[in-house]
Length: 102
Image (cartoon, rainbow, N blue to C red; front, side):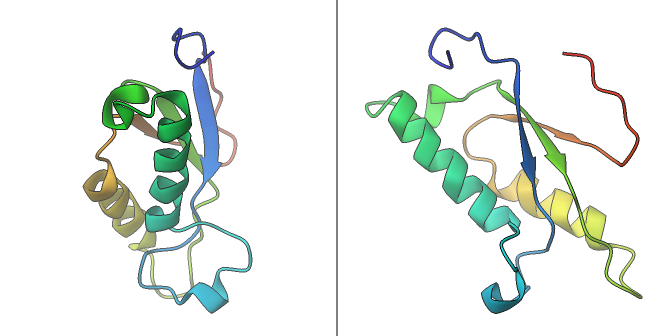
């Protein structure tokens, strides 16, 4: 499906910034781990050219947490995701109540 460009998008949650200790993630992802998972998927899709395997794929990012007194966490997470994006995926950030048309 991915090799043939038939997958419209992947929904992934990314709840915390990279600086959050792994022991406090409680099963949620942070940007580093989100791209670790996408890189793993890319190698499955094309082991010879994994950096191009997911290029252009829409990744809809959900469930960004807003810790008290740190209202800039969403922007920080977005910036960290952009910095980690070595796969050329299209990052789309969703908020509760957003409608998605694919």
